Image (cartoon, rainbow, N blue to C red; front, side, top):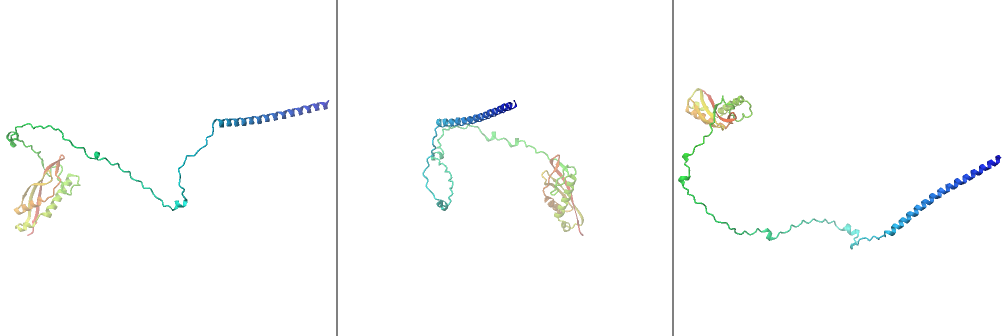
Length: 257
């Protein structure tokens, strides 16, 4: 009994082994057949496409005859640069350049209206004209004016007191340099002499209305000569307007005995 059972079992195992091998072979064959079918289908598709689209041979465009040039000729030939030619301006026709002919215009003549002009009636009388008065320039003393006249060289000062002191200093130096003190000895004067000088610095900075008083007329003339040589100054101001400023300047000098 045992031997028969073993033989049956072995027979069943061999049968199952054979069936499994057969199934594996069938699966492999199916894959191979599927691949072959795909290849055949691709080949048929390519053949159909080739039949429907005929191949046209490529023909290169015709070329002009080109002369054969050797490399030796190219090396030996000098390099030439092409110069750009300037575009020539189109010449205008003579009829367009010349101005058009001027034709005479029909201008109507006209006459001026007659006027009864007489020198007696149309020319106004000069005596009847009214003079326009010039605005009066105010006059101040050097002590009462807001801004004293500025002597050349005193422009950089800020306060009125500084400008006044600079004016007196510059004026004294100018008179001492130009006044001839030897006149006192020439006219028999002795000791300390004084010349009173008063003048006005007008709205333009010039010296006007000069007055002098001295022990001798020669000294008065000398004082006038010196004061008339004073340089033009910056005029004094009152409320930002140029005004006239009266200035008094004594001249003292001593005659040696």
